[in-house]
Amino acid sequence: MRVFLFNIDPLRIRKMKLYSINTGHFKLDGGAMFGVVPKSIWNKLNPADENNMCSWAMRCLLIEDGKRLILIDNGMGNKQDAKFFSYYYLHGNDSLDASLKKYGFGVDDITDMVLTHLHFDHCGGSIKYNSDRTKLEPVFKNAKYYCNEKHWQWATHPNAREKASFLKENIQPIQESGQLNFIDERSAIIPGLSFLEVNGHTEAMMLPVIKTGKETIAFMADLIPSAAHLPLPYVMGYDMRPLETMKEKERILNQAVEGNWKLFFEHDPKVECVSVERTEKGVRKKEEMILSALGV
Image (cartoon, rainbow, N blue to C red; front, side, top):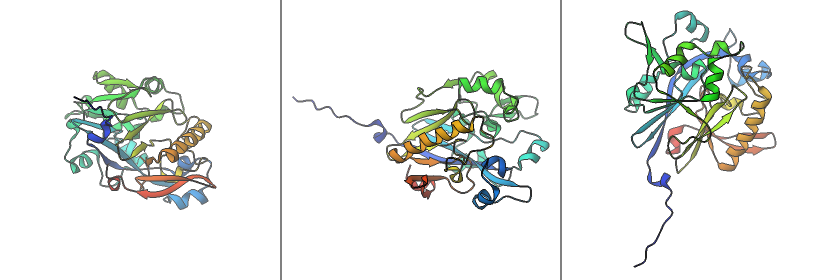
């Protein structure tokens, strides 16, 4: 009797599904978002209002893999006071709960909560007040929360420039709940999900890269917040190490071209995903698409 051994790619027999989760829009200063790029250029890409503020998405990503539901980032939440929201103009009809419900899920179904980093617009939805607003508690009570350990230390002992982005009420209750877990580039929460560590925007931000068997989707977080930020010099004023950001963008954009990755944007108000190609001006957008059109 002959026994034949076949190398079967486990990603081809697993049914991984990806969902775009819109948690709302907010506004940030256009100059801060585009750094040294003149307004005469960036205002054509994302027009500002009379206060120089541009609208940005807080678009998260949900991975369904068997019985696992893995959410990447969760927006800014809604527990802050009116003064806080007066700075950031939370607007639109999207919310975390409504977007999950659209696909038949709720916050209690999330098994794994991955935080690319701990700036308030990426992790604020992690924690909520209880019914009488006397205590802070995890939104995802059945989930493991994941963060990079170096970044956790950076966020819980913040520098003066970045301190306003790291809110204790978003961060400390995660650790107090006992649900905090640390990840790095070697971590494998599920097959097909890996991470790239980048340090230009903030210390040890983690970029998830998802291989579905059909496509490779790279979640750009704040390395490349929108399609308008693809050119290397288009670096946010919020970045701690802007020259490092440029090097990281160049490296990852080259990987994206070589691997035919699709880039998923967390903050682009209109564009969910793009493919990229090399041009005489550098790596640029090839084609825009929505995540659902990729069949993943």
